[in-house]
Amino acid sequence: MDNNNNINNFQQPAEPQTQPVQQPVYQQAPQPTYQQAPQPVYQQYPQYQQVPGQYAAPVYPVDPVLGTPIPTEEERIKKENNKKGNILCFISLGLMLLPYISTGILGGIVENVGSIADSYESTSIVSTILSTLVGGSYIGSWVCMIIARVKYKNTFSKVLMWIYIGLLIASVIAFVILIAMCAYISRECQGM
Picture 1 (cartoon, rainbow, N blue to C red):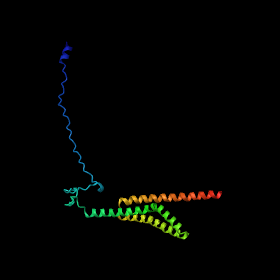
Picture 2: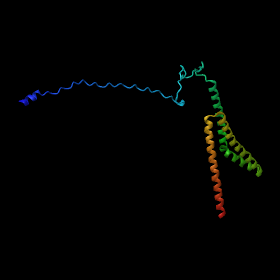
Picture 3: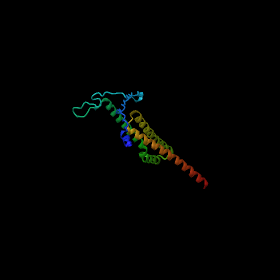
Picture 4: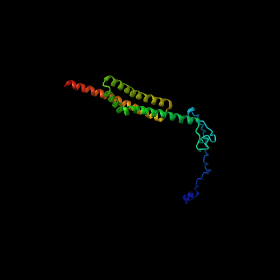
């Protein structure tokens, strides 16, 4: 029994009195303030203020009779220059086509002159004059095209320029082929 009493008298250890544990209060660190780094000069865009009506279509005075806008002086000069350039280009084109058209006519004239005047000298004089006119028209066509291209700068003159350059390259190639054929034929004839 004593054992029982001992067990009963046994004091249980006192529970330590604990205070509730306070959770630590975390203070938020101040947020760092980020300053915008200065942009290089080439990345800074100027701020433009839009003026009302700044991008509106220009208003032209209207012709009271026709009801069409009256062109400005600059547009009128541009249209006039384009018209003059086109006239020069048509003259140039006519001069360029003149030798191709007149080849048959010139051949007939040379034959008739040759049959009328039986002398070789008169035929050669007429053919020289006519071939000079043909060569002059070819040179004149280039001159007119160059004037139109430099002075008036219209599209027609640009197209003519490239056509003439293509014709010039084709004629150089044809001339080289003709010379090569003549050399080949003369070599073959010497072997016979």
